[in-house]
Structures are given as structure tokens and as C-alpha cells.
Amino acid sequence: YEKLLQDPEAEVRTAATFNLSEVAKTGAMVYPAGVSGEEDSQRIPVATRLVNRVMQLTEDDSENVRAALAMVATDLAPELGKDATIAHLLPPMLLLLRDSTSEVRLNIISSLSLLNDVIGAELLTQSLLPAILDLAEDGKWRIRLAVIERIPLLAKQLGKEFFTDRLLSLCVGWLGDDISSIREAAAKDLKELTALLGSEWAVQKLLPRVKQVMEHPSYLRRMNAVQAISLMATAMDEYNAQWEILPILLEMHCDPVPNVRFNVAKGLGMVGPLFNPSVHEGQIVPILTLMKEDSDRDVRYFARRSGDSLSAVFDKPK
Image (tube, rainbow, N blue to C red):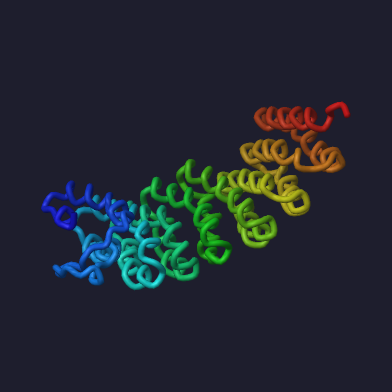
């Protein structure tokens, strides 16, 4: 097997590398490299012998080999245990996190859960965050999108402490990305982070940054911010949604750009069912009534649609 990892053909090395974790999981006891003994006491777990090959593979000329390694190498961590993982597996993982190929770095980030389970979040965060920040600003939009899609998973694995000010700013800053798919994914991300880390955390850490986006000269950014806070509200408890999100959403109904206003109308239809009838009648209905008379037909359309959907919720016979 080790000869296959050193085969002159990159395709063979790639295929062999993909099977690295499966070989390690067999739990076979083997002699250390270069030792040909007959005493069982000399035998070591196959994972211990293979981890020495990992460093060599990080330097492979083929990016396909390195990408394959990045997908499977962390599977060795449970077989090695904490001390051996820190000593022998973490150093090559850090090299892969700084690999020149963004796909390699992304594969590492996608396969961190086992490493986190073995060595703990604090050590992993210290080594991971710089690579996340680099990938978050990658020139390829699909790489940026892939990072965004993995942020909630990292939040679940690593907790609130993972989110430094710079990473928080990036999460919100994606609302202004040039690519629409990135902007949409960023809004969904903020909702998922709110659900995972709690309303209070979102109000303290995310909302001030989103409010800044709502004051941006670009109407696209303001529109995306409206979409984001509407989604965030659906993941909050009723109190925070009513007192922290709803006033901001209502205030944006007078934005000078129709695209922003009709997203406000859509947002009110989305968050309205979260509240009691008095909030609906006293705060939401008056704004939607105004918007039904808007000069822009799209704003009028979405105001009517949201009004009708909320009426269906609140006017049900008791």
C-alpha cells in the first residue's frame, strides 16, 4: 500500500490516498517502517505508521493528491488519539490549510469535525481561522460560496468563540458581494447562525453590523440587509424579533428605492406570523396599508400579497 502512495503516476497516488483512512481504520498491527522483526511487542497500529506518510503527501506535486489527502487525513485523528494527533497529524494539516490551491484548503475545512472531537475547539480555531479568512476573500466566487455554506457547520462545531470581529464582519460583508448567489447565501447564513448561537448573540454581534449595511448608499446592499434581518427574525424568540428587528423593518418602508421597499413588504409578510394580533393590527397593518398605495406597482403587489397572507393567519375564526 505504501508503494502505491509513492507510485510515479499521480492518478494511482490519488486513488491510494483516498483509501488512507480506510486502511487506518482496519486497526491492523504492523511493524514500524524499516523494522522487520518477529516480536509482536514491536508492532504498532497501522494508523501510526501511515501518519508518517501524510507529511510527504502534503508536498506531492499533484494538487489532486493533496486535495484527496485533505478530504481523508482528519479521519486518522480518532485512530491516533489526542497526543499523537497534535504531534504528527496537526502539522501536515496546517500545511494543507496554507496550500496554494484553494480546493485543497476548502477540503480541509470541510472535514474538521473529527479533528475537533479529538484535539478540541480552542487549538483548532487558532490554526483554522487564518485559512478561513483567506478563503473568504478568494477570487473564485464558488470558493467563497462554499466557505459561506460551511460557516454554520463550523459554528456548530466550534461555538461562539470562533467568531472574531473580522469573521463577523466578513459574514455580514458577504451581503454586499458582487455575485447574487453569494448575497443570498449570506442572508441564509445569518439566519442559521441566529438559530445556532441564539437571539441574544445575534442581537449583540450581528444586528449592529447589518444595521450599518442598511445605511449603505448602494440600494442592493440595503435590500440584502432587509432580506437578512427578515430571515434572522424567523430564527429569533418573539421578544427579540418584535423589539429588535420589527422596528428596523418598519422604518425601511420609506426607502427611496422601490426594490428595497417591496422587500420590506415581503419581509413583513414573513415575520408577521411571529407576533400576537395586537402587534399585527397596531404596527404591521398600518405600514402595509400605506405601501398598498405606493407609487411603484411591485411595492403595491407585495404589500397586498403580504397583507392577504397575514389576514389568512390572524383572521381565522376562533
